[in-house]
Length: 344
Ligand code: SF4
Image: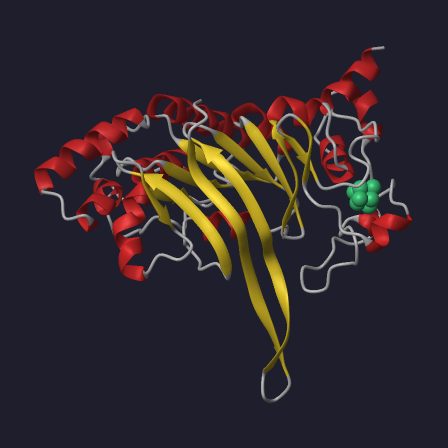
């Protein structure tokens, strides 16, 4: 992985207006993504994790402009001359030209493929949109299908002839055929059988390395992210609350929310299961978040300052960022720490 920045996200926001009354006046906003900033290096895998509704999928979709952000910037470096473009503010016409540089792999390989197109046509679709000659498209479809572990003799079949795992391979081939620099994979294995998940994860990992892709891997399952990500960003109520190299985050989390997520990772040893931290209270609403630290009503370490002052995301050690007032003093338990304690 190089340290050359490919994507620079700054203060990205996605607010949905709340309307009420007969005149449908805007009375507030659901802040699904709220002021998110981070950089992604060439060839880096960033895991984006958090509970359902934390904003991770919305963030991924805003970056590739599957939906329009409300504000902020997402600058992508593309082409041989390293042109810098802002995806967040690009016009519809510009976006059509930029599409080949970024792509998305969706969670559900059953609904994201047209049942009326052959797999060959589905995979080649992005190249047809670029207006490439049919002969070149045919050659590239065969090559990427092979790279993704698909049987090229089956490319004339329709998606319903393929299993879930094979369909996800088709989705990955379609996402990669235009040689993008950036892929956002939104829970790409969570709709698949457990037995197939490892195969698709291994495929993504191999392709990411071979093609030196920059990958944002959105997941709710921390054990999945641990194996693929170089760094992990944890989201809570639309914000990144911890961002760190994977090993650092798993060994020694610096935010109580991350510690709670870690403790819920399924453990094979029954003696370790009672280590799970039960979070009290509801997940905060992005329409009406609590004052101060959004996590304070559920945090077992909260003190008075947490109710009034919002902790900024700050670097607590090299490359390890946390939005907790007590990140430097709390001794939080990571995955390895829990295992070590059980051994002892
Ligand atoms: Fe908990 Fe306070 Fe840290 Fe928020 S700032 S995570 S409430 S200790």
